[in-house]
Length: 512
Ligand code: ZN
Image (cartoon, helix red, strand yellow):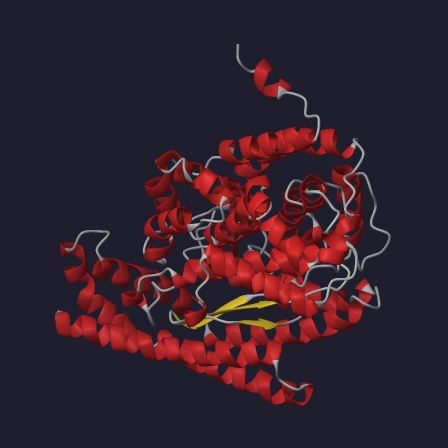
């Protein structure tokens, strides 16, 4: 059995080599590649991805997993070997259900659709992408049909990114969140907005990047096993557990853009850098779900990076870097500026309070499209109506409405958005557990010390990679399933200091 297990690992490492090579090509394309390389690069990436898929779905791997099944059954569930066999089988069985020809068609359709979207958005022309989006919807439904027995047609699609979550689970969580979030948003946004003009002066790119790098080194991002480069849309990528890279961008007239996106991507990067080296090259060497991954980026970006404690230590350093711009701006003014709450059009620019409303809107529209209760033709109008209901404003055009996010134009419809909000909820829940074990984390943040928090996250979350599912992990780490309470109380406590917030009346009524 040990020989067979070794054979499995060798096999999986070769699959991973192909994926990593494709990831490196993509990283290069997004950072340094001259535009003349685009056509050949698309082909090269597609070739490597196809080879990886063929190798991973080969019957030889299925036979190896069958041989190893009795061995897995003898081992404890949480042993590394049993977990490797279990997680590989789960991914193998999912991968073989979809015919390679279909995947090929889906990829090539997605890349055409993406090309058209890059022109349709600046042109504010939904009709350009409409036929592509209709085809995407048809293909998304077909993709779901390869996994019969679902409760909701979106379930198999959600499963790809947040394994084990069903549309009904997400709906229940989101509906509870909505009930408790909307009164907070409404109460804050009727008050006069914070003045964030201090963030909108001229800040040199070089200084911004330097400050960002110094900051994430303090948080614990390891530059011996990673690096940061510039791109248009920041992302994290990994070629091995020893090479986990992040990307960033800066705007000279907006200090917060690079700063918080750098901390966000560093959060994703530290998660992957913290996975146990023994898992390298196997399916265990990844974050376990999009929700848990986002919980780590958002914990560092928001819960730590936008906290008063953090800036009581880091603001003097920022002032020293930008003496002309911030020398006379108080910590309080800066703190209020980086936590300004307003109902705005663009999801990626939204503050942490209103952000989730953007996600809930997209999630509900996705389900309507997949259920067939909403047509692609009616999507822009539904977007406007829902935006009016939730934000009290109507997007002036489709560019900043239904065309703003790349997701539906570059991949299947369904499963792409819920992870962002699940991440906000889980980030607060994990942070609460970390504080239960180590209350000193708060005073350490105030002195620029992150070792206890980082160590706790590594011990409880990072090291496991995808050994446990998201729900198993949350249960193990926090002693309960996903709860929105820690997130709501985090928001109420933080924003209750900055704005007048009414008590939660609806909850008080439910007491009797
Ligand atoms: Zn993220």
